[in-house]
Image 1 (cartoon, rainbow, N blue to C red):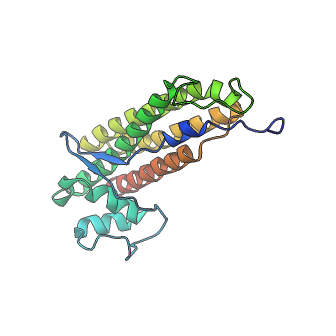
Image 2 (tube, one colour):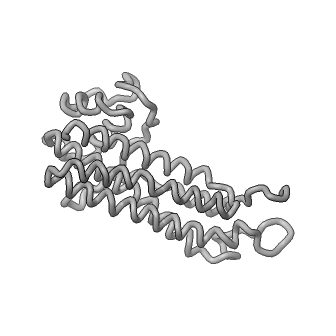
Length: 219
């Protein structure tokens, strides 16, 4: 490794960051897996868009930055079949909250993986590398940030229910920013930011963008 170059997070820790995107229906124990949809900017994609989507869902998602992601997240919740615009907004916020919660859980699990165990691999040359030594602390800090994002999104969902859309907008916007702190922590410690974590950060950011776009319709 060249002097001054970022240390690389042990592969096994990066692999455990792969978590499903899960949507929890507000007020129930329903859990539904959201289809993997590339959250590209743009309007309806005739290839990936479900053929039978409610007109309200389509028209609502048409106004968002990531149409396919919006549709996938909303239709995964059974209540979307009868929800009004405010209900669809709550579903979108809940999808983002569930995503943040899943990432937090995965990061917290990795943070407790003892070095030298089956969940950790020593770097070449024996001893514990800088990345391995710092990874648990970094992942624990990141878990905390995703936990803060989740709490902000849960508060936003309550604000949507109370029709306090300005508050909801601020709370979702804040939630989208928390994960960026995680990236900064890795950079400060000069440890390479895991590619999978970067993908999850972007996924949460896109879900928050969808929620904000729908909140804007209600404002």
